[in-house]
Image (cartoon, rainbow, N blue to C red):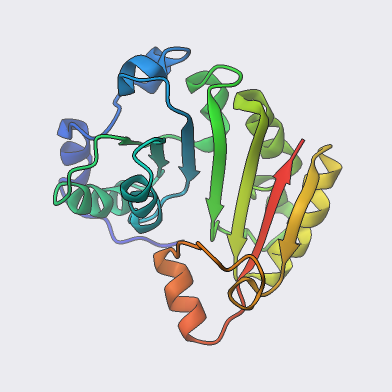
Length: 211
């Protein structure tokens, strides 16, 4: 994915009060960061943050953390965040493979994966966020009853995910190849990509996985 670099993005992120700069230092005490013991839900690859900020606004009883690797993308999310009052959300610029260094076992209740990079070449399959390798990472931070929710418009990636998730020892609670025309559409919060792709007529796939 080619992204346009925004000059000064790293500096703005480093100075933002909405970004956790050294998240590893909060491992095991995220309740202190938020000032409460509410459940924590994270979105890996939050993009510009529409999805997770809508959730945070609708559910003040839940704490949210948006994770984004790319500075220029995260900066757009921070600009939106500065316009609204949401005490139950923070952001991090980290790689998902490092989640177990940031959260203790059982600190996270739910993980959202929305429109992740499909990494279409077979040799890059381990980089897909629903690969066995990443599911093992999620297992290390989720509560025993925690779940992973995954949405994509990429049918090939979705079919790969159905197999890899079960290969990793997880179970599929439910899945659909056409979310917006299914029984699971109620309460769905759309991401920027979801709005774009669905407006073009693309079907949106979704699954929920548990252990």
